Image (tube, rainbow, N blue to C red; front, side, top):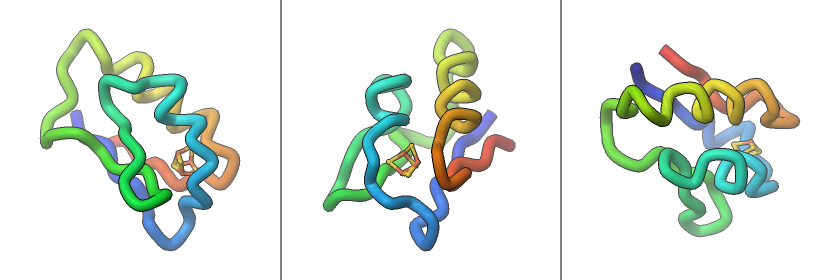
Length: 61
Ligand code: F3S
């Protein structure tokens, strides 16, 4: 599983980094995904972060 942050949509609200700090981090006021594949034990919080992003900038695939 992978997460992708659309940099054109992200407003830097930091919600995803609070919901799932193992997967998302802030770089230059923008959310970035740590690493390539999301480990199994953090996939649920990554999905939750995608659902909660106010501008739907996170895609999970
Ligand atoms: Fe950006 Fe959404 Fe996270 S706006 S900082 S991707 S919650």
